Amino acid sequence: MISKEIKGRILSAIELNRSNYPSDAKHASALGISASVYHQLKKGQLEKALSDANWVRIARRLDVSLRDSIEWKGARTETFKYVTTQLEVCQERSLSVILCDVPNIGKTFTARWYVNEHRNAVYIDCSQVKTKRAMVRKIANEFGLDGGVKYQDVYEDLVYYLRSMERPLVVLDEAGDLQYEAFLELKALWNATEMCCGWYMMGADGLAAKIKRNVEGRKVGYAEIFSRYGGKYSRVTPEQEDDRREFLLEQARVVARVNAPDGSDIGQIVRKSGGGLRRVYTEIEKIKRGL
Image 1 (cartoon, rainbow, N blue to C red):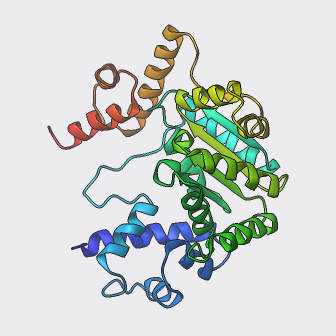
Image 2 (image 1 turned 45 degrees about the vertical axis):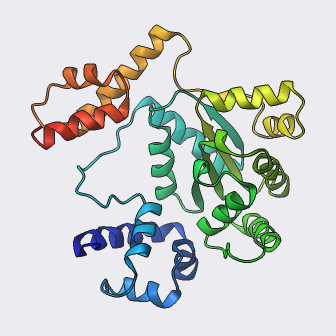
């Protein structure tokens, strides 16, 4: 059973997310609910408006925790500044970029934050939509289009919409999980929306290895995809191991200073984290819960 308090948090997230869409109808479609239900939610009617399953689905889409979690503030780490700048340029100039870097440095957090703060930008977790059809339908749904009709209609509607919008941006996280046919479809989408849409592909070092392996193996489509996404890999962290460790520890320090309770031993949190931002969260949660 979803409590009234949690429903209120989800409703607040819905209200914040509304500014990213041109109309209530598009927003309702993106959330996967009818216009009449959306109208009820706007009026604050929480009871019986949605099933628990739908509350959970919307919470997942808007990244709302269903449990009592600590408040987490964004910190202007080097990763945050670097990725935000790249996303802004991609959206403003309809460019395409591939970012490949080590995990647990704040790439996903930054991408989600950017999409929540900027109109006509959507975030896609490719690990959840690995096939061509699932990926395209998900992109269409995020823009408020009907992803449940015949696939060719979904594809054509999406292309038409992207070409008609003002500076759309698609962020593809965990792109290394995409199947081969999905990569080919990304090439087709890029061709159909050239100079009309920004594309930002993110992944760990495995994404670069996968693309490089397939380019060298002359697998159809990979060289073209790599070329369309700038022909190079962006990276935030330093290549040298010692420099990278210092970089990660400094990021952990910046995040801990913003989020740790007053009087906390920041140095200890950073040392225990080893530079991993998820571990920083764990250590701060333990402090706040008195563990």
